[in-house]
Length: 88
Image 1 (cartoon, rainbow, N blue to C red):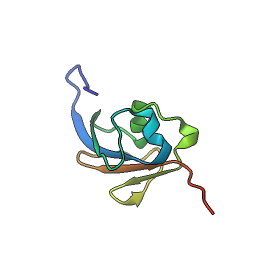
Image 2: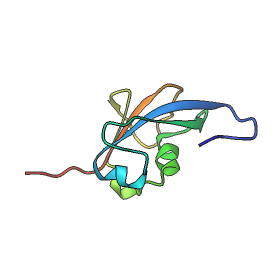
Image 3: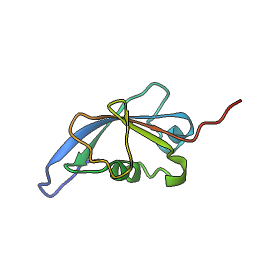
Image 4: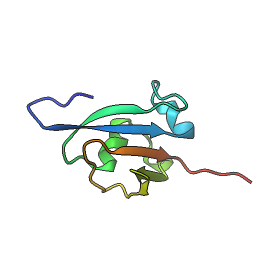
């Protein structure tokens, strides 16, 4: 995603896990994606950018720390997005 209109941008690294990769064709197992977002973007903006269904986003880690959807991202952040995980 390129942000136009002279807006300041930042780069964020993203890893999608499990079935969330199904929503982003270039997201393969072990792949880290790099995305340009406007400065001040929130985790929610990143989820919206990839058009991930909100009900499938269970956990988001930014630089290995759990964060809520209203957390403000910064240039160079590394984000992991996880769906609900079951097992037994």
